[in-house]
Length: 467
Ligand SMILES: [Zn+2]
Image 1: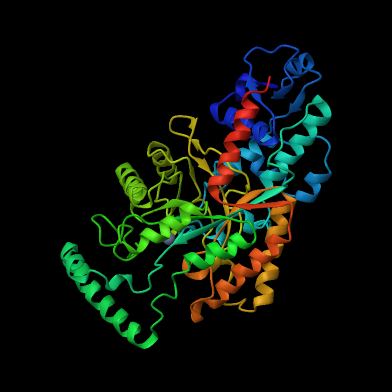
Image 2: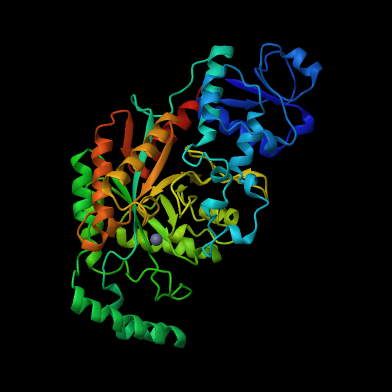
C-alpha cells in the first residue's frame, strides 16, 4: 500500500485526485494520511523538516509554474530512474485540461471541439504521444525499485496495450430521411418543414440516380470480419432522431431505433457478444433529462442494459464538465467523447481511463472517461488517399499507443467500416487493413468497451482489496 502525505500548503482535492489517479494507474493502492509518520512512503511537498522524517519515502517536489518546464520528452522519461520533476502538477495540467485554459473561442470549432492546430500537443510536436502514460510508467518503475512493491498489471493475460473497436451509428440507412414523411413533417417547425421538403427531394433524386439503398448497412459484415480475428466492438446508436422534439434538425440522425429494421440488428449484436452503446444527441448537453430518456429508450429497443456513451459530433456542449457530470447522473458507467475531431491523437494527452475532476464540488466524476485516438475521417484526409500511406500512418499511431502501454478506442462509422459503398470504399478497406494488422499483434487486446470496462472494474476491485 502507498501511504501518501501532501504538505498542507499544497494539500488540495485536485492534488489528491491526481496522486490517486497516478498511483492507481501504476498498479498500487493509495491511502491518504494526514499525519506525517515514518511509515509514509510517498511524500509531496518541499518542506525539508518533513522530508527528513520520511527519508525512505518516494519524494515528489512541488514546483511552481510547472507549465513553463513540463517534461514532454517520452524518450527521456523512459530512461529516468528517479522522479526529478513535479509529476503531480504535470499530470494535473493535462488531465484537467488546464493546459488549454488560456485559449480563445476561435480555438474551438462550432461543435465545441478543440482544434488540433490550437492544442498544446500540436504546438509542442507530440500529438501522437500520450505523455501522461510515460509519467505512469516512470512512477511504476520508481515505486517498484524504491519501495520494493509489485505493481498490479494494467491489462489481463500478457496484454501490453488495448485497442477498443467502436462504431458510431450515423445514418446506416442511406435513405432514412424519406421514411414516414407525412407523420414526420407534421412534428417540425415551419422553417424545418421547408428544409425537410428540400432535403427529401434531393434524396429522392439521389435514390433514383445512385441507388445503393443498403450500401451503408454494414452491421453483418463488420461483425463477421471482426469475429474472424476474435475481436468484438461497440456500436453507438442515436436514440433520438432529428425529427424529435428539442433535436437538432441539421445535425442529428434521421433513423429511429424503434423501426422494425433494427430488431435483427440489435439481436445480432447481442447474440454475438458485441455491445450497444448510446450515441447521445447533439443537444443532449442542454439538460440531464435528455440523457436519461435517450438511454431508457435505447435500452427498451436494444433489449439490453446500456453501459456507455459517446456524444454525437463529440459535442460536449460549451461546458464540457457539466455534461460529463450529467453522464454520471444518468447512470452511464463510461463515456468516450473526449477526442480530437480533426486529427488523430490524445485530447488530454493520456491513453488511460480516468474519472474527470469536477472543479465545482471538488470530486471526481464516476463515469469513466476512456480516450479515443483515431477516427476514420481524421486518419483519412484528402491529402492521403493512397491506401498504403494511410495504413502506414495508422500503424505508426498504433505503435505509439503500444509503446505507451495505453488503452484507447478507434472510431469507424458503420457506413465506413466495410467497403460496400464505392464512394466510401477507401475507409472500409483501411478499416479491414487495420484489423488485419491488429490480428498479428498478439500483445494488443482488441475488444469492445464493455469487455474492457469489465476488466477495469475487476482490476479496481483487486487493487482496493490489497493491504
Ligand atoms: Zn455521430
